[in-house]
Length: 122
Image (cartoon, rainbow, N blue to C red; front, top):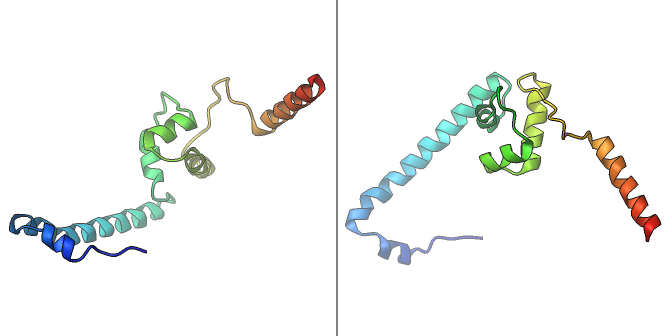
């Protein structure tokens, strides 16, 4: 739970800064309305909020790995992966193999094969 510092906050506000603080609720309201409008407009073209930034970060001439994309957007890798999966399904993005990609089933099989080798060696 959280609460305002009340009197302490009031003591921090000077006449000069009072004008700045009065505008904050208006700015927050404008920001919220803008985000809502953006989400509404994106939904009209089957894009979720956030996917627009991901689409802007992609370059058809220079494919990016999911981890690099996640780092550049400051979003967790699983979140970017899920967003990309949706964009691939909608046909807006395509997955390009770079030679280092390993399908999950093959990666899992290789992992268990490695564990088996380790168990036999032990």
